[in-house]
Image (cartoon, rainbow, N blue to C red; front, side, top):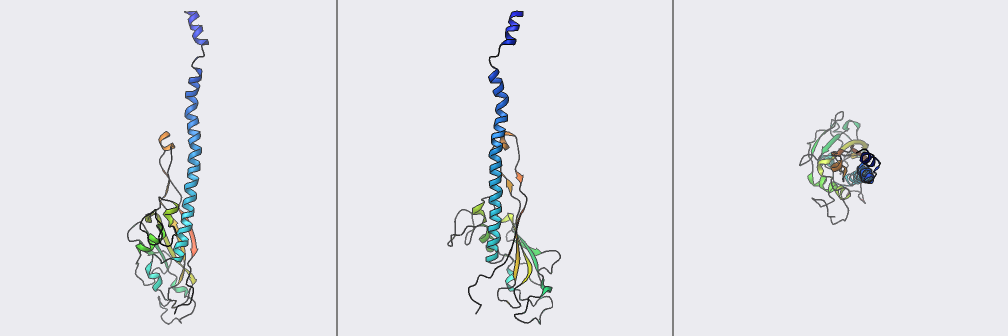
Length: 227
């Protein structure tokens, strides 16, 4: 029995299998961790680029807040403002439109004159043009102008993830036909990092991304003065 016990203690057959059993989980976690890091970086980059594209589209497209185009700088007691004069500071409008509802919900931003007497009207079509591309109502196809929407850069973006603010910039002039030129703030919110494998290996749940925020000035892209 003593001889048998000593033989068993000196026996190293199977040691490789034991070591492999210990090392394999660590190796898999490390390998998939590198994969997940690269995938998370890609998701972050695509979401950031989509937010930049959305802000650019918002600057050159019809506004979600449809009343913006009807403002003439004569609201809030400025009825005697002279056409062509600098946009009055008392009309420091500020409206935030959220795509979490359909149609989008627009409301005054605290600390501004807000709707300056205008209805909080919104346009689902204008939001779809930004999220899906002009003339589109779903992701995956380009419209007639062949320009992508936000979701073409990052498929998980929906109108519910988008908030667009229109703020007073001081640009534009009284009685401008298209209304004032706002500062536009696009926020991309509610997106999550989706794991490839670690969610199954370690039971990790999706991690919420920080909000993305892009600020841009509205543009007048007409090639000639209004007739």
